Image (cartoon, rainbow, N blue to C red; front, side, top):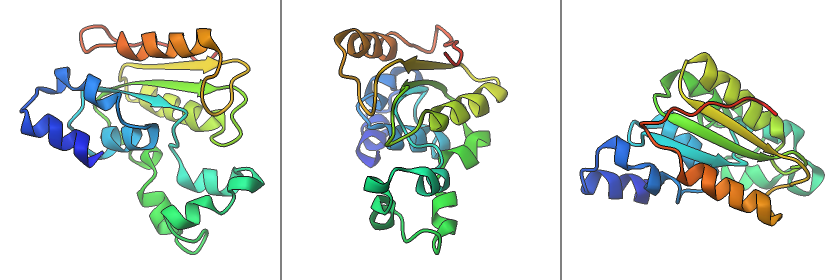
Length: 166
């Protein structure tokens, strides 16, 4: 995220020209960049984590302690989980967002995207949520990969995003 922000600010790009850089971020930094910074005009979230606390409580056994090494031990460091969860800072968002999510994702459940979608929509910001049936964490079907690329590359500041939970 720091590199993308540095690229935008060093080039003195207006926020409307920065979605292309935001698309090169992986989803957790995309959501964090939109929630904690005012650098990007829009951003895509591919199966991104919006609530670290919820993920720590609900993730499958294989990744149940994964966040301990990234954030801190759960629940002892619940303060960090909350402080680093974009959903708790949705009130600071000022950018358009598109959320892309696999319906069968067990690593980052669809509830993460659905919660963020509702929060952004409640703020009256442009937001879209695309749920891909049969997909897990990552899109493997050619049609879904193509649709996710077209959806994120086609959004711009001049064309508001709209969508609903599918």
